[in-house]
Image 1 (cartoon, rainbow over the protein chains, first blue to last red):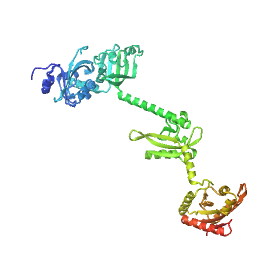
Image 2 (cartoon, one colour; image 1 turned 30 degrees about the vertical axis):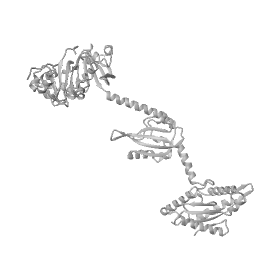
Image 3 (cartoon, one colour; image 1 turned 45 degrees about the vertical axis):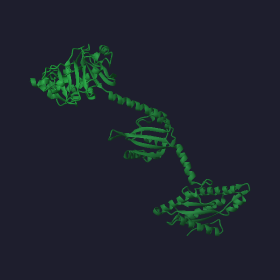
Image 4 (spheres, rainbow over the protein chains, first blue to last red; image 1 turned 60 degrees about the vertical axis):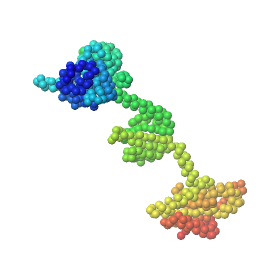
Length: 128
Length: 419
């Protein structure tokens, strides 16, 4: 595989499409890969560590309604539903282990891709 | 518990809090958020996208701008500071209604509970709008009373229509049975209970009858009682819509009178008389009682008209009918059969009784007098009668007619009964 992409890399989604689970685990930021219907199909180590959830607990479940309900609103979940193509980066706050955790989210979706992605990176409070 | 069990237990608890459908925040007096659940983030991040959910007062500012002051000024060491307060907020161009509760748990420890009640609030607003609509209707209907009763007929609400309809005040009707609107006769027959039972069976029932006003006066009402469902399977009670039909009944009664009576004399008209006879004959088949008819023909009526005047003749006819009615019972109708011919129906009689009745009528008419400008008119009648013997009306009338003819031939002013 080519060298590791960065969080904001334009080619990220192409890289993710062909990445194996081991490849995903090498990334320093969290990756949640979903089927078009929102069911989690891959959940990398970085995400698992900071969320405090093992992949087995997460894979096969609907991400927005049952794994991370904090994202189940118009800012995140609804965008994946409504928009055919998505590449948006927003500031958000996760509640990983019930602590408010400022994060940066990148929403990735393409009509020709087999999966859609939520990329998660911590940010400093005050950063955008 | 070993390390694996601890981890397992922690994961299970974490998951539990992740999916709990209520937003929870634990914070200190200075607002520092120590713990926050995912649903709280779901609801609060859109209100302050640039924020970081580190401070409760900042995060909840769109809901309660002065929360810091309220917490600071709350005197108790524990208790509710904000209690299920509803707050309307806008996010992403949409309106949400959130319910917020903030409690001091102990000392510096505070908790906030947050819930999205947008749908609930919308339902309550809709209910409010419906109630206002009904109030407007009730305040404006004049001829109708609309009210609900429980399953056993107890009036459970009052509205303006009851005041307009019968002068009823809330204290008059609340908690009382709808029996109170019915007249004594209907109450004795347990009519209200019967109506509710029928409504229950068929979904609704329509009835007409007397209704009472608060001042005790009665009026004719048309009522429709409909079941009031409670969900899909149960019943909550009934809705009653009553309409004052006094005017319509008055008109109907008058129409009926016009249709069945002779306008001049007030006797029944021939068509109605025939239907009465047919009915009496039909009932005699099953009942065993026998009807009788008496045909009365004024003797020399033509000469009365010629001698006095047609108008005087008319008054003579009226006098005859009045004399008959005074002698007879209400169940024995007087019918104007022809121009100067009358028929009396005796629904249940025998030869002796009919003869005696006929003789009384003959006497009464003999004694009737009609004062006119040209003197007092006196008249006599010839009467022919027949007792029904399970025959047709045509046959019965023919026999009475034949008897009448005999009475005329026998010199008039007499009674002849058919054999």
